[in-house]
Image (cartoon, rainbow over all chains, first blue to last red):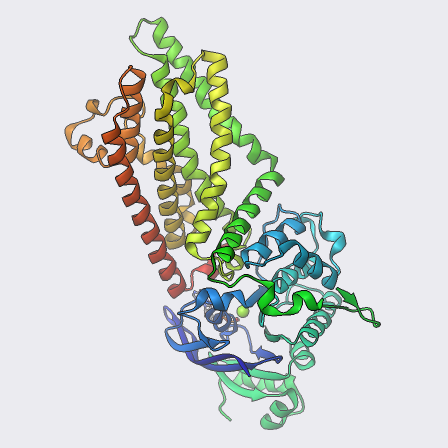
Length: 244
Length: 290
Ligand SMILES: Nc1ncnc2c1ncn2[C@@H]1O[C@H](COP(=O)(O)OP(=O)(O)O)[C@@H](O)[C@H]1O
Ligand SMILES: [Mg+2]
C-alpha cells in the first residue's frame, strides 16, 4: 500500500530551480532514502511533502488524501525531525513533549509521553532544559517529539548530520528498530552513503532537482556500473544529472 | 509498554493502534486539545524564565509610578486635573499594550528557538494557534493589571473599581484590539523577516496619539479626529473619561467600538492567512533563524 505518492513536483525560488521534477512513492513499512549532494533539492522536496512549501506544480497524496485539501488530517499522521531544527530551549524536556503531544491531538498525552520516554530511554533527561542537552541528546528529544503521534510516515531531514559517528550510529540503530517494530514508513534524506546503505530498503538518488535513479544500493551500483553507492554518488555529483 | 528479551522496548498494544491514539483530527476534542498544547507550551516557557515573570510586574509598575507622580505634581501646581483620569488611562493603556505584545512575542519565541517548522508541521491550524496565544496572553494581562491596580490603590488611593461595570466592556474592547494588532505584527514578521520584529513592540504605539489615551480626542486636528473615530480604543478612553466625570457608560460608543473590533480582527486574520500562503509559496518558513 502506498503511504505517499508525489507526482512531478517542481519548485523554483527566484533564479534557483530547487526542484525540477520529482516523483516519489513510499510504501507501508518501507524505509526510503533520498540521497544526493548539497543543494540537490532534498530539503525542498521534504518541505513540500510537509506542506511547509507550496509546490509550483505537481500533486502530493498521503494515505490516499490530497495534502493541499486535507492538511490537518494528513499532518496528524505524519511527523518530521531535522538536524537544523530546535525546540523551545528554556522548557524542560517533559514540558516540550507534553505540549507537542497535545498539539497532535492525542487522547492521553501524558501516557503517550511516558511510553515514548521509555522507548527512547530518555527518562533521566525529562527534568532538564533542552538547551542544556548535548546535540546527541537533543536529537533524541527531537525524535521523541517526532514519534509522539505514532506517525504512519516519519520524515527525517539529515537526522544524524549534527552528531559524531558514535551518536549517529546509535540514532540509526534506534530508527531502524522503531520503524521495523511499529511498521511505520520512513523517508530520510542524507548525503551519507553508508547511512543510506545500512538503513534504506529503497534509495532515490536526487541531483539537480531530479530523481536520477531509484533502487536498492546494490541495484544502483550495478546500474551505474560501479562497485558501491559511494562511487554512484561521486559519479552523479560530478556529472550532474544523468539519465539511465 | 513491554520490554522484549533482547532489551528493546516495544510499543504497548493499547496505544499502538494509530486511530485510537488521537482524537479524529477535525473533531472539537482534537481542536481543544491542540489549543491546550499551545497554551501549555507558553505557560511552561513563562514558568522557566524568571525574567519574563518579573517583567509582568516591572513595566506596569514603572509606568504607574512615573505617571502617578506626574499627576500629583500637576495637582500641586493647581492644574485642574483629575488624578483618576490619568491613572485610569495608564491602567487601561496597559491592557491594550500587553494584549498586543504578549501575543506577538509568543509567536516570536518560536522563531527564536528555531521551533517554527516544528509548529508548522503539527496539525495545529492558524485559528487554533492564534486562540492558544490569545488565551495565554489573558493570564499575563490579568496578572499585570491586578498588580498595577493594587499598587494604584496603595500609593495613590485610586481604586480601579470606581470605574464600575464599564471596566468589563472597556477591557474587553482593548484586549481584542490588542490581539488584532498582534496578528498584524506577526504577519509583518512572516512577510518581511526578522527585521520587522520591532513591530511586535511598537505597532501599538502608532495608536497611542490617535486613541486619546491621555487627552480628549477633541484636542486633535479635525482630520485626525475622523481617523481616531475608527480606532476602537478611542471610544474606550472617551468612555472612561465620561464615567470618571460621573457620567453614564456611553453604550452606543461601546457598541460601535465592538463592531470596529470585529472588523479589525477579521482583517488581521485575513492578513495572516494571506502572508502565510505567501510564506509557503516563497519558502520563507525555513529561512527564519538563519
Ligand atoms: N527557502 C528557500 N529560498 C530560497 N532558496 C532556497 C530555499 N530553499 C532552498 N533553496 C535553494 O534551493 C536549492 C536546493 O536546496 P535544498 O532543497 O535545501 O537542497 P539540499 O537539501 O539537497 O541540500 C539550493 O540552491 C538552495 O539554496
Ligand atoms: Mg538539506
